[in-house]
Length: 77
Image (tube, rainbow, N blue to C red; front, side):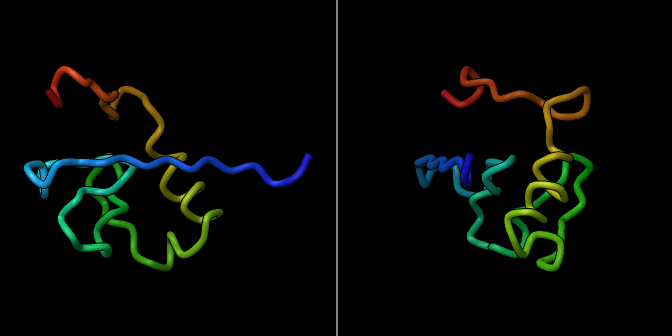
């Protein structure tokens, strides 16, 4: 079956710098705090140093559920 991957890109206006959060980081210019769990825990580099660790230590813990708010485009407009 081969390797499968997903590439996602978003473009956010500078007006929102430091005012966003979620799976794609928080857009504050600090790469050290881009991986924040829903409970507010900032994952250290050692927990997100490769795709496998990002998937298990971050992505799987940020699944939509009772504590994770889904994206609402009406809030972004």
